[in-house]
Length: 390
Ligand code: ZN
Image (cartoon, rainbow, N blue to C red; front, side, top):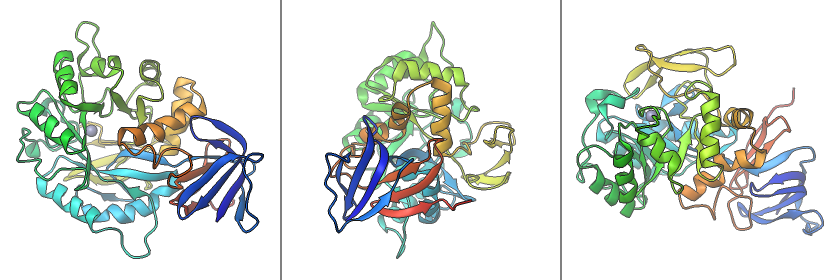
């Protein structure tokens, strides 16, 4: 049995000072304060005095990292995943963007095949298929030659059991609503994104089973007070969760704060949309079959654009996203953490297993300094990252 004690725990719904976590068999056995939990004498204890311990971060949208792009090379998922714990990410959805459907099938096979021997890292929970059923007018960095209309044939085999957990599509496209219904019936979370949907079309999509909005404000028409469109529908409908990229480039900080005011911690979800340049120097990197130019910015978060100037994902890390969300909105640490942990876990229907410090859940943990720098990450109770002392 392993024990972490003297920590400030953020579950994230609750803050527990002088907190104790007991771990066994990869799971959390008990959570509480030092007075309420008896630590067995045989337990191996780690003193986390001065540190915050929270559930590990869950990123619903990562395109790649360390030079590798998942759409181009689905086989890179496991090696990239091994490096993600350095930013506190303990599970994620590798994202396959618009491309020939064989890329999705290949990625399904990579996940179904399981990790290589002795592998440790951030757990891929299943795929996020962003496209190819997107509106050409809001294609963003997706290659328009691979865009297509949604059909039931095209999504045959896209089930939660077959490794597809989230699908982003444009609900206004002809044929979209039966595909939304079929995916939802197969346990897939369906999301509206890269879309020109009007308020009415967005609501028709929600009625068919859409539960999420992909990178709110990006690749959708702007919020207009007479035609609220997809962003207005996402902000206005309480049961919808919306992803947002708080890198200071994709959405103005003031608009992140407005989205926060409308949705709150239980319905706003921080994603990075990180691409192959994550963890790398500025330069040229792939996204699917296109080239992206990554340049440095004075605030430290690099910027990724196609030659045309279109944003092509981010080079944002989850811990930086956490710090920026607090800076932009003034929310509490517990609230900010929820948008990276409990909220995505609940959306995926795994809120009992991940995203919270609670007895019975997997011991996916991040250890943070008071300045919210990651110093250690555990996945299923195994240490997967530890910062080197200066
Ligand atoms: Zn996108």
